[in-house]
Image 1 (tube, rainbow, N blue to C red):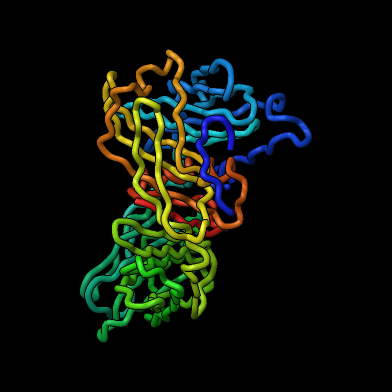
Image 2: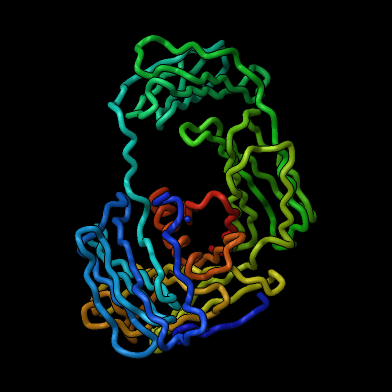
Length: 426
């Protein structure tokens, strides 16, 4: 591992669906001479719009840093050799934010921030309502392009229909519970959402279940939960959640599911004492059974990070996992420096157990650490993206997904739904 990483070696992303491709190091050329531009797109914390007043420092492992302000498109770029550190300084709502991404190869293309705003197209269609057979309790309704609402006690279900590019060919789905407490749904495709008439939904149909079977559960895991979200890319058909304590090496969680050929996102949380493993499963139609061997696929538990201000070193440790390590580690620290409070995010290879934050150039002094820096809050996650072995690709994906997660009140929200994402930490 290169200059700024103190390694503990072990055996072993559409525009916003995944980060741009990452160029690999030039083959047959030494790191000292292989150079190419590293590009960063900086986007606002919650809106995803380009940030034109951020400052990016490109710090090579040897030699002076290159400081580049972002342009009106939120972009900064500099030619760097292998092993460079990228430090992105910004102020979101007056709060200084510093993102440090270490060990970048030449040609890396990073997105620091959530996805760009989505423009759905079409006019806001206002209030809509649907008639469905009698039901008990509360029913929820979802419609194409983000429309959502509900009803109570057998009444018409109502929703607010947002702007929709598929206004003349939408889908409306209602979910609820029958008198025996069983989950049910009613769906109608090819609905003209522009009309004022009440949408008549077909009779309620019973939901089925998909069994999520956990095996080789570590003794440290005390409970597990599964959240299942089914959608067709334009409307969410179903969202359900099941949790249970674990006593033994296996557990079966039966999750209600709509028996339709729509894709499902599976989110599993295995909760330990003071830590958790989280799996974001790839989008695919659900089957009657999904088996997950925690012992063979989960990354190890990861301990809380600590900062030694005098040496600018952040350290952490792993437990279990049979020597397996995640692709990327993301450390988040709330700091107090001589310049005030700073929110620091550090992204490093998962093979490391420590990282040294390099001294930043004078242009970033207000964001920099000092020997009196104190840590008020620290959090760390390790992310393992199944099928991805290139650190730079994984680092860019995790950075992008973490910003989207913050936007939605989560740890990370994977943008590459074609792969499984394992997240460990706290």
